[in-house]
Image 1: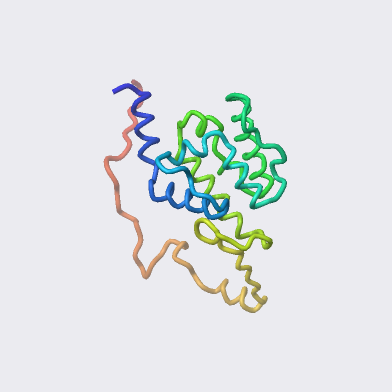
Image 2: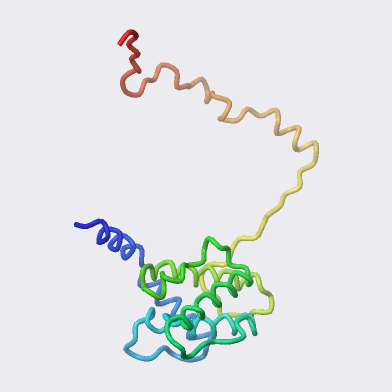
Length: 184
């Protein structure tokens, strides 16, 4: 099997149809319109117009001009405008898919992961009242300890100190020892 085919199969194996369906339903709820029947999820969002409409619903005016015609470069510009808008919305760069992942359908799983990251980001915007996609991110749980509590913790010997009720790893060998032969 060629390397390219192996890579394509590995990328396709990462794809989760349930997540694709959840992302599609989330987009449909926000936009208030169903995807055309019989069309595949990635084909509907491929030109970036639906994605730009999505981010404009979440953050009005995020993408001021959505290209509806003009060839593939204009459609890829829609995708790039969407990517820039979601970065400004708060989605980390590492979670944003590459333009070719969607345009050439190279990694639709990554596109869905980006949509889930965008869905998680909506929890952090108080002006957005829902619907949301994915689990709510955890908030920081900062703890303040008194000096007395910190001193009490210093008297406890943790398991990282190397002992656990007298048990240790001394005398254990894993595999053969390293043999160094001098003079060869």
